[in-house]
Length: 356
Ligand SMILES: NC(=O)c1ccc[n+]([C@@H]2O[C@H](COP(=O)([O-])OP(=O)(O)OC[C@H]3O[C@@H](n4cnc5c(N)ncnc54)[C@H](OP(=O)(O)O)[C@@H]3O)[C@@H](O)[C@H]2O)c1
Image 1 (cartoon, rainbow, N blue to C red):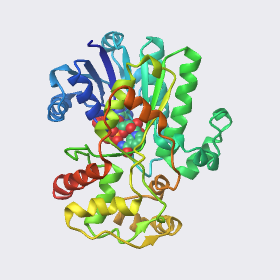
Image 2: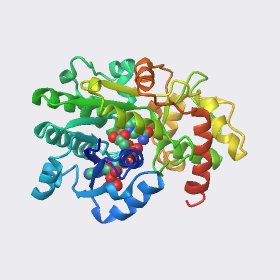
Image 3: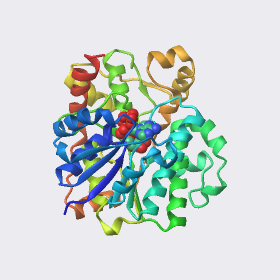
């Protein structure tokens, strides 16, 4: 069955793979685009990723504008959307509170309102830190009483991007609940490149990590032997998101998209180093010390990262039973994360570092 879908963030890394996946399944995809003149480039990319370019259309708009900046004509067209996928976000370190809230929190609320008003199913992309209960508690969020959160304090602790993703999640759930809308939330771990091609886009945290290793800037492993950066490949994630949108049992559910077989950070760096013929670091540097170093602007710009990026490197393990069962029920095969890492490293080395 072919259905109409509306996707925000469809030009981004995860979004491109989702649009390719959905269009390959025969759905019609309308993508919210700040620069709709770039539709032909997006279609080309969707075709390269195995999608059906002719099923992809642009809708001019912006998460920051009232009613998403939609024209009345586009608003009418979107009424036919059975599913709205919300992936759009400003994903970067060092964002101001004002800006990250304007795009990521207010934007999410606008998309949720549209979905609720026209009774489209909303599939929202959150983040896996929302499933780290210790972390939420540490930064002052009680998921059962999010309305009691001191958001200014949260933003001060975790930075603009992470703070706004957390706030957007609870604000969207509250809005959908008040309006009686249908919502499913998928929480991805840090996204790894495509399991076979290694395709990944500039700006992704894993690209910065691989680049630092290649350029000899990563001479110690952040954290201890127990620290890891949980990953999920982009193709497995796109398939989970696409499939859960049409599963009635997933209404009102949250799915943690995280590969529990992700190695610890030291082995992750070994997997990345191996196909590139590099030696990976063996000694560790305490996260606290690295955080202090990254607070020095020249160090942060040398390593192309910010202290807030280190929050995602952790020792917490997650319960992935729900996603394993979901994938089994829908016969979605989970790619080998070590091989995917090697392909990603080769892709980054050829297309991101060679170009940069
Ligand atoms: N990648 C990860 O490791 C990861 C992990 C957990 C969760 N997530 C979440 O997954 C989602 C997708 O992430 P991603 O890695 O694909 O991000 P990305 O590559 O940075 O893409 C972001 C997308 O959001 C769009 N966007 C940004 N500001 C906008 C605005 N004001 N109006 C309309 N569109 C706007 C961008 O459009 P333009 O082309 O116009 O810039 C782009 O399509 C995000 O919600 C992110 O928080 C990602």
